[in-house]
Image (tube, rainbow, N blue to C red):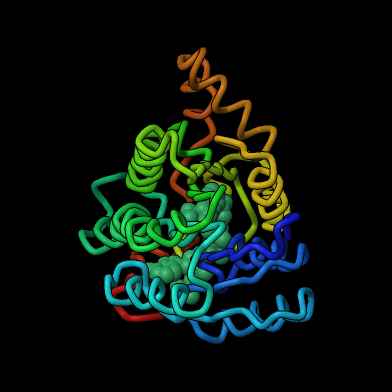
Length: 280
Ligand SMILES: NC(=O)c1ccc[n+]([C@@H]2O[C@H](COP(=O)([O-])OP(=O)(O)OC[C@H]3O[C@@H](n4cnc5c(N)ncnc54)[C@H](OP(=O)(O)O)[C@@H]3O)[C@@H](O)[C@H]2O)c1
């Protein structure tokens, strides 16, 4: 909530993890929520928890970011109920098995790119007209520490998150002078369903312990309130980004020794990509 009243906040990927906690963090401030993801049961759980905090029932839209018709429906429902969007948290995303690049299957590669990059870009395109209806709106793209650093055995994910960072930086440039601010949030290792969905072992990220998704959510709300351009979590993540930028040889020496293929025993093939099956 601002001095102008409750904000209209759209969160994609709000059925679990960082998206759910971000929705809750805005609801705690008294804001109005729009929740989008494929799993209706997860969205309903988030909606119930948000309503308990803000007293307002969120708008729940079940859909897939890779389906244009679902994004168009999201835009239409937001327009009909609110006529504007004050904050879009463009968060839906997925990982992949941490294996050598050429062991990933075509469907795995295609799905990660379609969800993390094409879906995220199309979501912005569908909702930008509604962000433009709000004076001082904020677009939050959820990248990763891997938007600014690299990791062996995690090549396609890095490609999508670097791509999202390039899109974010260019769009911010393009929208300068407009009423829409653009922010990139780069979480580090966060303890969510992300690793199970991707059938990957978080130990592949090295010995650094993850933070809870509520920590990322608080940072997002703070960043929106302050008008930040880019934020990174955690302290280790920020250190990794700085070392990768200013002493890439040191980054390669340290991370090269830590990163390894990390699939759980027996997990030689990824499950069918969720967006190809319409759910998981
Ligand atoms: N966890 C980490 O360590 C970490 C680190 C850096 C960045 N991130 C980023 O943070 C974001 C959130 O991930 P998380 O950690 O919170 O993982 P998560 O708990 O698995 O949440 C991912 C969310 O994205 C949604 N989603 C996935 N594919 C979708 C699709 N095709 N259409 C619509 N929604 C879709 C999922 O909902 P449905 O399955 O219901 O559709 C779910 O709500 C992602 O962009 C991820 O890349 C995570």
